[in-house]
Image 1 (cartoon, rainbow, N blue to C red):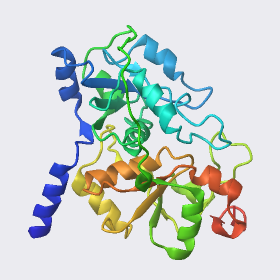
Image 2: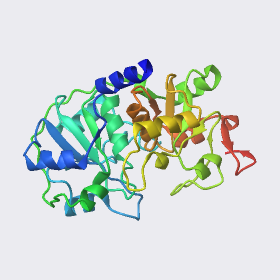
Image 3: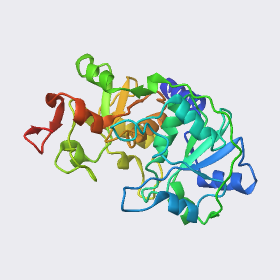
Image 4: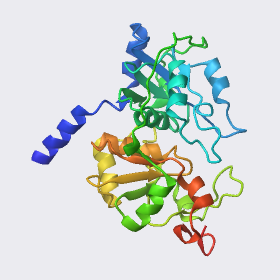
Amino acid sequence: MVTRRAETMVQQMLYRALVSTKWLAESVRSGKLGPGLRVLDASWYSPGTRQARKEYLERHVPGASFFDIEECRDTASPYEMMLPSEAGFADYVGRLGISNDTHVVVYDGDHLGSFYAPRVWWMFRVFGHRTVSVLNGGFRNWLKEGHPVTSEPSCPEPAIFKATLDRSLFKTYEQVLENLESKRFQLVDSRAQGRYLGTEPEPDAVGLDSGHIRGSINMPFINFLTEDGFEKSPEELCAMFQAKKVDLAQPLIATCRKGVTACHIALAAYLCGKPDVAVYDGSWFEWFHRAPPETRVSQGKGGKA
């Protein structure tokens, strides 16, 4: 009983990671969008499938701006989707009308209900911004429930955002490599089981075999979502971590292919009352290209990726 009360207190102290479609629809209807509340469409799709910016221009939540994750990243890095600099992030979100006092709500249009939105949620948090939420159910359920959409692009007044990198939420290749020996952190991989095991290929990848970092545990992010595209309850999420013997009382690093779906692990743990999950930004893409072969495990190529 004491433990449950303590967990409840922790969850009350944490900023709400999810907002409902009903809450956002009421905020839009009552004219609350502005400097204090900004909405971002963070959709991204594999090349040759859907066109995220085109779909945004056709219809989006009224007042929402398009967050282009291809622009807001370290474009000089040879690795996929690496974080931009503090100055780069501050400039980008400032141009979207976001200040340090803004509550940011992020969604995407993926058919799963949520795919890239948790990455942007984590990006704001890793740059020191705590008042950020993911739209539970995403644009898929916003449309399904009949909430309003518009094709009018938003033109927010630019704002000043000060970004301060929180290094406790961010792990580098060197830190993950050191952790193989020290084992201070648990390491959880959010990719589909076949890609983790090395029995299925990495999608849209040239020169990248599948497999996983030695010692990592597999928790496919899709299992955190219901079939209807909503986040599962904290009770269900906590039970999933327990079933995998992941101890949420201990340090945890999340990884995936490029640091995107790893953020679903960070979000799920946050909803369980653990706000300090770190994401390995370079993830498997960087690890495959830099790490010693004996640290890359695969069932597809004789035990090494």
